[in-house]
Image (tube, rainbow, N blue to C red; front, side, top):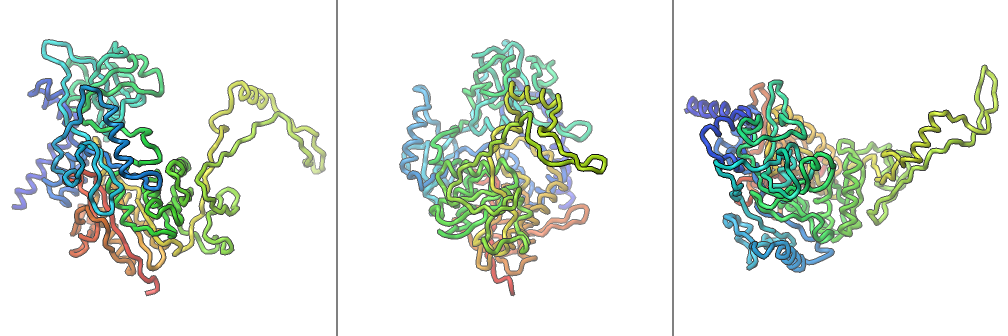
Length: 606
């Protein structure tokens, strides 16, 4: 039996890890244009990673997960800002916007997605927008799309093939979620494409080269040829994401740096776009992320830490659950990401959120760095002055003064052992004068423009938060649609897990006894999920898994895995699997892959 199973695994691994070009070449030897102009992607995995996931999920289950990851969820999940609007009001506005965007010849298409329990639970007659019926999630809406659709490219064997545009993988993943094709995402284009022409849009997926590296095998600006003699002909087979209208000529697409390159008219998956729609009233967010904020169960007046909080989706969800009463410290180590949190909080009218620049691995400050007279405030990393948090998340702008050619100078300098009084004016070189003249003519450079300031923190004292959310940076192998996964290795997955343990160690120190820690990731990797739970429970005896509400995800994984190098990874033990939530992208819920664990913090003196 084992010999037969090993043979199946060996066959699967050997067949799945050839280059995309080779696979497509063989497929197209026995296929027609209808197969070529289709969307039928398959994920390439590192062989050792695939073996690991097959062990965790089983060969058939992992195959379903891998396929589901290449497709988008066929609905958009929206969280209503109940402090600014009501669910009913938002439903009416969304329905009006959707009906307005449809032409007279279009109708909302009901997809085969009727089996989804989220859709079945809706009592709304209008199928495009439905209210979530899960207890506690009455502020969540689902806007339904449809797909996959067969696209008619109007191409017969006796005709010339359609003109084409190839886009980058990241651009294609955004298009599958409802976005347009913007010019930075255009990689290649047929010759003589003119504005207004219809083009077929396909995606360039990374392939592994002879050196072991990954790349798309073409440079930006490549000219596509129609016949099979085109060296990129087979690469595109099965990777067509739809049809659209060129908004620029071929030359224009590679000349400008921004704007829409192709207006997508006919898509494999039809999902609405929410770009700048009802800003401040709604937030587009994956369902498991909303559940993670609810699992934290924040209460009014509490002090909460959201580690790695950018872009602020869960932070604002927590603030709304608290009715904007209390204090949420939202940290991220990136200056620009902290600005994103500030912007979102301001947009949604939330004042209890205090964004701070802070490396999650340095969240706990030493006691001698903590100013007991001011309490747990954040310190400015530049000057050490304590900044008491204001009630508004508005940005502060620091204007950098221009450089002058002359400046007073009254100090003395030492020359040959004697003090010599300096000139009244400082010497300015001709190079400085020329530089300043260029600046006056061309305007300030990038580093001298208005810079938005963010408050920095040196960390917080132990036991200073009622609740801590750690939505940890991870391998993101649960996000969808995903058209590429080959770069992750067993070693890289272990590095993610090691990094997450260090961040969790910080979270444990900051949560007070009697408090709560919620840990979440957007990956299907057990090493970053169940293995972290095992680590936490074994190392910190005062931690225990706590029930989560609402609970709509599936159970966690029980068992262990021993890698070929002898490294053993322990997962959950019997009885623990139902105290975590694992969201499976191949389940009827049709969500991203996600994991949530909730810990109750007991007495640390025990």
